[in-house]
Image (tube, rainbow, N blue to C red; front, side, top):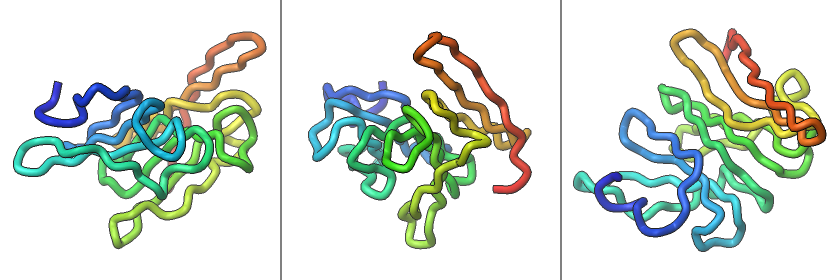
Length: 151
């Protein structure tokens, strides 16, 4: 449990806690225009304040699995937004100078497949990006590590 929000009775899924204490998470039950949206919860005077929907990370489709790099400059998410290659695709967002997130970039066919590509995790120290692929036809789960040379 954390002091204050987000312990407010709404669902919290795939939380990511940044070094400054900011929590990004997915919720399908929190009120809003869509289900399956990404929210952020920050602190004020040592307590978490009410989570806010992160509009620039969300689409009209399910968006989930937020994972921010340690330096806070990049965010990976899984999304069912239009233009993807499969069930869920992984997208990369870069933080702009104004603190908001720029437009998401589909990670492309070297990362995404026709299946569910999700649960991104970035190991900054060894520059490894790890995610899972679920093939719904065979129920096969694969964990894929990729070496990141430039971000």
